[in-house]
Amino acid sequence: MSELMAKPNFQTRIRFISIGVLLFGLCLIGKLYLLQIVHGSDFAQKADRQYVQSPDSMFNRGDIYFTDKNGTLISGATLKAGFTVAINPKTLTNNPDATYEKIKTYLPTLDKTDFLSKAANKNQTYIEIATKVDPTPANAINNLKIPGLGIYKSQWRFYPGNTLAAHALGFVAYSGNSGNDLSGRYGLERKYDSTLSRGNDDMYVNFFAEIFSNLDKTITEQDSLEGDIVTTIEPTVQATLQSTLDGVMHDYSSESAGGIIINPKNGEIYAMAVDPTFNPNSFQKEKSSNIFSNPLVENVHEMGSIVKPFTMAIGLDTGVINANTMYNDTGSMSANGYTIHNFDLKGRGYISLQQALGQSLNTGFAFAESKIGNKTFSDYMKKFGLGQKTGIDLPNETNGLIKNLDSPRDIEHWTAAFGQGIAMTPMEMVRAESALANGGNLVTPHVVKQINYTLGYSKTLDWPVGPQVIKASTSEAITKMLVTDFDQYLQNGQAKNPHYSIAEKTGTAQIALPSGGGYYEDRYLHSFFGYLPAYDPQFLVFMYTVYPKGVRFSSETLAPAFLDLTKFLINYYNIPPDR
Image (cartoon, rainbow, N blue to C red):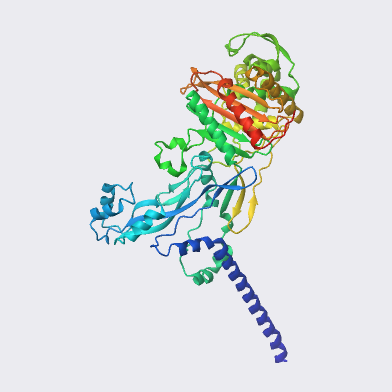
């Protein structure tokens, strides 16, 4: 009887032992995968730096990629390898002056006074005197074999495109109370910092000790949070937009300029540019940190006449007006003790709203708003997302200022109808304009489309299309009006493209006084948006420039820039004609 009972117990123990061996084997395999695949490059770096001294673990961070039109990944932010030169003042036996003379040839930017001051600090054992040193001078210094002088392999954040998409990328800098933590400070570097950051595991421990230690960490560690990010930014489109804006700044001595090129159907941003810009490789040289902020998502402006298509679309959607609706343009309209005027103070008599759009007459859109009604108009403008954050994957986004839409007075609604008295971020405008173009839906503007995790798999990010603001038929109707505007009114009809339908609207807005309560008499913000091919749009282009000199209207400053961009996009993407 006892032998029969012992046999099942023996089999049970064998099963438990087998399960334990299996689990241990799975953990071992998982750890080997982490070491050889996930952290393989880290050990390769260790091997590469055996001939130099080894300080703390080198800086490590995930990459950011642009995506060209063929789907090829292009490096936007990566790591660059080089060397750090440091001294140990306690063991620097050579005369500091003599040491400086020996190394200054290889470190031409090394300041003698600064070097001697560091060398005199005998309380320190490690003081850096030069960073980001290329291999040739680093090897030459190493061959001098000066006691107390060390060469250390290092890595740092590097942006191959220099200023390319700088405001979208941001940069990495020291942060935290100690000032010793490197992290993303602006742009995607900050927004996706937890994904791009790498853990602080010691890379230089014994290989087998790494395998057999911390098995619980091997099982539970969330390495999947670490990865590289793939953006929607197309580098050639980005460079072209930046060059175009730089030309506007140069020609008209503007204070600033910005632009966005987006796919209005799904919200993918192909380019976003700000001028003046900066080089994230040398951001320390900038005199003010204000240049690092992204006005495309952080600043608001009264946008002027590019708001008029929204007013028209609301009237079309509610059925109270259409392109052929006539009104008597006397050149001005009055309400609540205030009078609004056309840009030239002139009236045109009885004209259609299509003509009012083409000539950008304020009276036409005050008239349209009066037909729509204040509450309906305000509700629609909010449905377009004005006064709200867009949800773009960039930090510090703010929302527009649309308090005037809640006013009980007509005058605030009239001015809002032609783009004054309410202020929006450029990104808010782009999202709302996309709804005009894409059939009436709000999209979520975004810059990142995919994360490639260090564990070896990828995740495509989901950016769902939002609610429908206007009917698809309304979208088509307002597009037709904007195409007519381009064909017949822009540059007096000379801009018309016989092979492509293009929708557009110019905008010129007075700039508000910083103190509030009025506007500059001689300062304007110029804005412009357009999309193509108009009835099946692949690209929507938005631009603005602040206080251009010597010109008053955006038809003079931004229309030529838009025409150049449309020609480029048509040729670069080989867009087939739609006419």
